[in-house]
Length: 347
Image (tube, rainbow, N blue to C red):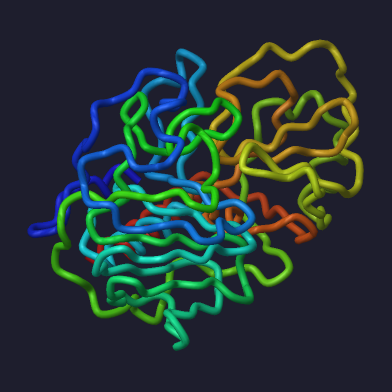
């Protein structure tokens, strides 16, 4: 979504606060989560199940084997930023399945977009998809979750942690970015960058991401290794429902369902693995590669999820089902253009 980098007049540009780190996530210097030169704004009371700092990812280093990371649902990440006057590439908190409790140490504008969490600001329920103002000493608590698996909390000015290779995103497997390459812990403190820009009153009703409730169908383009599969494998792939296994995480979803039989078992040359790649190991059970994927892989590729449907895939949780609908390239292009136009209309 390259057009998302267009600058919006008056909004916050997420600057590099602290000096950029080239170490493995800045271990030893960000354990308390207070590096950066913005004001300390949030204290983590309870971290939730998996809460990480994410911006739009560590692009430009895949040739060196450095994963991109970034948000699992980029659209919700961008919308949360836009609601508080940030640029889309500012860092947010990605909240997964069970949310945190956070204390505001300064007056702050925030917004939560994505999974349908119940939110409480002190003792009062507060809505998602709209900017809210928190006073000093207020606490934001994430409650029960409805549709979707991940929500994005944006603060006016963006989360200010030391960038690593040009990104603040947390890559858990590599230990890069965020707070020492790890999820948030109780007692962590977070800084923000510059002050707020103009706010948007609310997300328009026609939200571009349809939150899955128990599962979703995503569109795919056929992969390059069709000759390695039994002729019936693509038919099975396009008709079955697969279940996300308990091992599923930000690196990829291990899917359980009918076996996709390989008729060629000779080694596959390692090749690039874009986000959304569906690889099939010798077991016949596919793996959907997600944000923290490795940059190359050596399993046969049966399909790739189209860019416009990646945010929906990113909102799935272990135990949910996923189905694949094979489409044409022109359909994928049209869907991406429509999504980008919807996002542009929210600026």
